[in-house]
Length: 319
Image 1 (cartoon, helix red, strand yellow):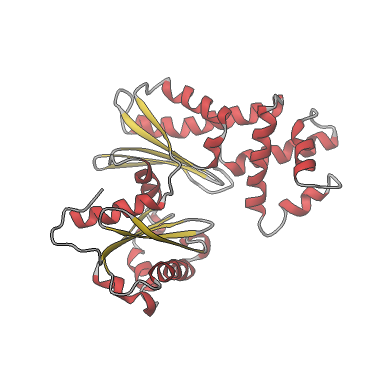
Image 2: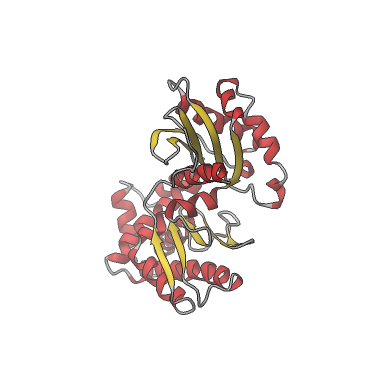
């Protein structure tokens, strides 16, 4: 992971940034990839909060990471953000960079290379040093992306109204099961009892106050953990939801595998996000993917995604 430059002393550094829908994480590292400081700020998704607010949050996190680190030269900065490889933002990277650099407190990063790229590539490289392969991210939302040579393919990732197999999708299914039982439109399920117990709700209707709050997407996503718990305890409805989630995630991955002709190749699939903590969803996912790609190397990544941004920042120096 180290950079191939000579006569470099400890005062030379790189910055890696992992921007997301809920938070931004910045890491300051040396040229070998050793992280010295990590800082956080608010979300950094241009599609969700706009370019200006995204830039402000990124700049704030960079400032926090650099605070108290005088005389350190930043040779390279890699900024991984959502949606920047999509049509509506692909040509706005320069605008985003310009907005970030308006913050005079981080002005000295201008002297080094600054690259804005996909948060999906950041997540992928946090789990592997290979450049060809696939990343499947499934947390609140989900997206699958793969690279092979110059080819770049994406599946899913169309936001919480879609994103089948995501935490939000599972949580929504659990929410529906809860009120179907309440109305006697559906069967009894352990999901209801666990939600009432773990969220300490006095009345079944109180769940509405939580999920229809300002933070409804996150709250609904949290129900996915209860659905998974109910599934592990043998609840048939919950188990069916988690199995379906595994199949949906596999469908996204298989779509990308086919488009990149990876079926007979050995390649990494980096799995990122809380949905892969589910044994049921993960088992079904791996089983389905292996039907078409037996040589796939499944990497359940537990490392910070920002590590991938550090790797990419260092690679820019090698290039």
